[in-house]
Structures are given as C-alpha cells and as structure tokens.
Image (cartoon, rainbow, N blue to C red; front, side):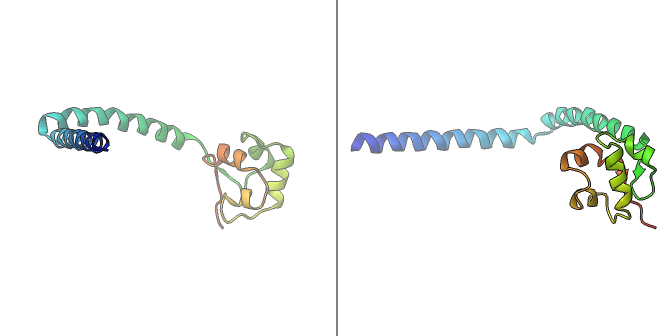
Length: 121
C-alpha cells in the first residue's frame, strides 16, 4: 500500500517538474535573441503563400450563370451532359448551388470551386 502511494507521489512530482521545465522553455522562447530567427523563418512562408495567390489571380474565372457549354466543359470533371444540366438550372444565387441542386457531386465541386463564380445581374 505504501509502495503504491510512494510511486504515485514520485510520478506526480516527475510530471510537475517536467511541466515546470516546459513552462521555463516557453518563457525563454520570448527573449529577443530567439525572436529574430523566428521572424526570419516566417518570411519565406509569406512569400510562398503569395505566389499561389498570384497564380490563382491569373486564372480567368468561369461565370456559371453566363458561360457557354464550351467554357463549362473546359472545367475539370464537367462533361457535355453536366454542362447541359448547369445551363438548364440557371440562374444560380451562388456557386455552391451546383451541389445543393444536385447538378454536380461534392468531389467535382471541390475541384472546380476556385475556378467558377456565380455573378448576379
């Protein structure tokens, strides 16, 4: 019985000490000497995120409310029959209506949602 209590106390102390060490490490991370490398590490991430945003801006978005059948079939996962369904279901309040109206599947929508818009008149 006493061995179990002693073991429990030792384990509890070990956990408290390890938590204290991690708190001390976290407080040291805020020192000015370590803040500079962290800022340098974040800079490349910002540049990496900016490049895909610029690439996405160059892509011409297809308006599902006014696009021709040929423009719609250029989208990945959209065939002639699906393009006809999209045209027949117009107008759309939002591009997500393609899924809610069961025109396309959620998987197809996930592939094209960054390529389409639903302009309102």
